[in-house]
Amino acid sequence: MKILVAVKRVIDYNVKVRVKADQSDVDLANVKMALNPFCEIAIEEAVRLKEKGTAEEVVVVSIGPKACQEQLRTAMALGADRAIHVESDTMPDSLAVAKLLKAVVAEEKPDMVILGKQSIDSDNNQTGQMLGALTGMPQGTFASEVVVSDGKVDVTREVDGGLQTLRLTLPAIVTTDLRLNEPRYASLPNIMKAKRKPLDVKSPADLGVEIGSNIKLVKAEPPAERSAGVRVADVAELVDKLKNEAKVL
Ligand code: AMP
Image (tube, rainbow, N blue to C red; front, top):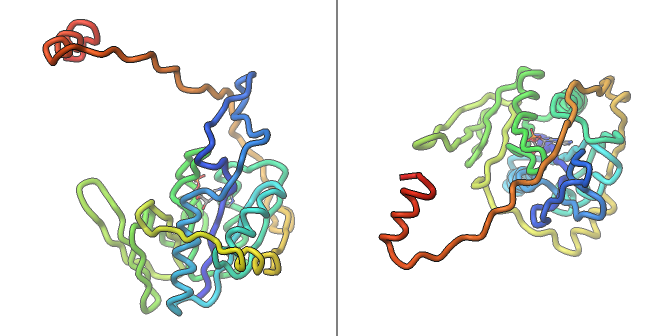
């Protein structure tokens, strides 16, 4: 079984995000970048399936500027066997990413594609679903458990008020939720080994995909500053303030 994992380079989740002075976008100058946390969970799940003997090969793919290769090397240090970088100057929107992934799926013919449920920078939560629509492959989104057997994958999903388990026929698409697993850290020897693993670079044209977009980021704004709180003497004063000042009671 071959698993393809899509990984995105995003702003590190520990970084306090700043908006550019002209509000045109988030300021990424000299900011630490990292693997999207949901993509780390996707890599971990694929690597665990390989360690169990369920999968033979884990291939990672990332779309975006040359710097994405850093995250592909990290993914290989975490256990992926090889990487594909689809290079584009800018980070394409979700539909373009899904079209490129569809072309990679056509070339690689994986039995399972694992994506994060969401990128923490753009918060789109749609690439896996779009890939499902474009390829016609069944999808199990927001997986908190993945069990593969006999050409099927059982995906347990956290839904309102409980759990739902879907049985998908492979090849299938899975998107990862936070509770699926706890990703490992890359060891130094594995970081060194990852430098020698194969990394193939392609252009969107090589995959026969033209990446345009009908979406323009108009404005980015930071959240409003919170004003300082006040200390109340007792519950009676709190209730009075909630009723008469905040008017929430
Ligand atoms: P999104 O729909 O943008 O919230 O992203 C969901 C998932 O799609 C991510 O966790 C990745 O697995 C995948 N994805 C999104 N953008 C890219 C990209 N540029 N390159 C590779 N995978 C991506």
